[in-house]
Length: 164
Image (cartoon, rainbow, N blue to C red; front, side):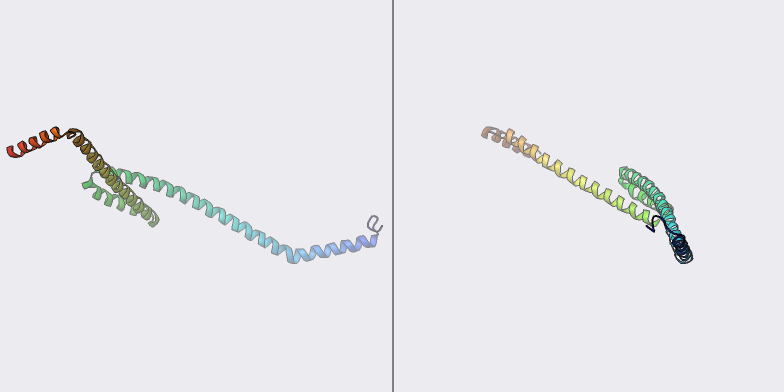
């Protein structure tokens, strides 16, 4: 029953114990805890500032990447004779305006475009060659389907050779 109706002595000793505990915590624990909290707050603030700086740099990088990609597309469309000259000018301007990181990205983008263009040209040439052979084969089969047509064609070729 002492806890339900505490006596004056119990209240005095509990108050004294609580006061000593508050004094010890205030003297030793709270400054350390507050210092740790301030350090954590400082670290969080620095991290937020770094994140904002990184976001700004990323936005700037994205804008630069977009600009460099547009320049590369314009360069691809230029005449082959002027392409080398324009590439040197654009590279020099990019080196003067951008950081080393941006130069590396520009070089990679140009190489990828050139490789894709070469691959597309090779693919187009292969397709045109295959279609030409197929058309020629079909025309020759249709034209030379019978023995009489073959003899006529041979005679015409002989006549053309002798006339030339």
